[in-house]
Image (cartoon, rainbow over all chains, first blue to last red; front, side, top):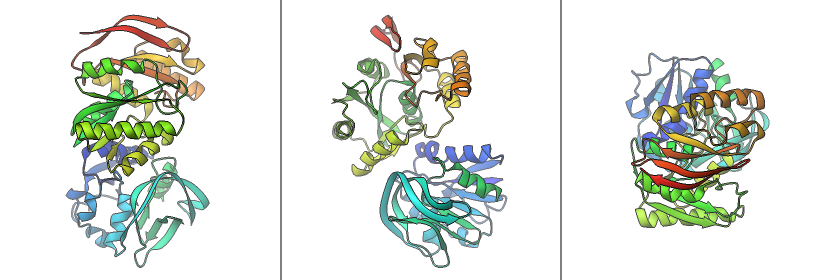
Length: 174
Length: 219
């Protein structure tokens, strides 16, 4: 069972940032459950095999005020998308920086999930991250870190639900 | 949150408004009327009838006019959104974008510059499921434009189960976007759960590509 975490502060954003992720998970053949980030703690995640932290609207930064320290303790595979990557970075000691990208962008990567060379991706964010200590950068471009990983944690700044569904499918089946 | 709907009068913007009304306060509709029939962003048949739809829905309409020249029409959109903010104190915009990165990212940029929220509640939706949801919700939708040959027999038809099945068949055979997201089809909504009154077509003219609604009344 996959846990999909809704990072939005306005329920209208769920259709845009959570539902497309749910569709990819379902189409890949996995059962899933959606929970809001405010309802998650170290105990509530026990029953899940994997965890996905979704993105949210550019104007939405409410999630950055929340404590995600359960991320430090879990050994379960975690995948962060955009806002999800930002909370992962913040929780592990990285910082949140102002950098905006909207629309199709090009990233440089050499990673078994993301591909090799220049990859086209959909960026939609007003903030980015600095790489936390112990993380490896898996993708980047002129605007900053586009992907990072450490042990069981994988995160990307761009949105795989737009033209890069295969990245999430590969992670689910990996 | 007080929201304005970027409104073309078609099924997608009406359904986006319906979703927005679940948890937010929709305070106005915003329509761009383009003189350019080839507009990438805004042109749709019967666009002038958005005034009647706004009346039927019971929401104020903010109209922006544009000559429809490629990037200038985005300035016209920005001005219309700013007007909506001035007049109705909106905090965000809702669009009916499903898959077009071209449209969605341009509107996202405008909202970001104006420090407004941007919501796209149909984003990446399965287009057949989306059409089924529209019918299930009770929207009465007529196909008013067909710009891909395999769809020509659907002009003027109401979207129902049989039409959706036909669109699904055409999707498999001709790789069209069944919800018309690629510009294959335009629609006009006559009534539905967000409407206080129904629009009744009194006179219309069916051409090769466009079903022109000439006279309507509210009931």
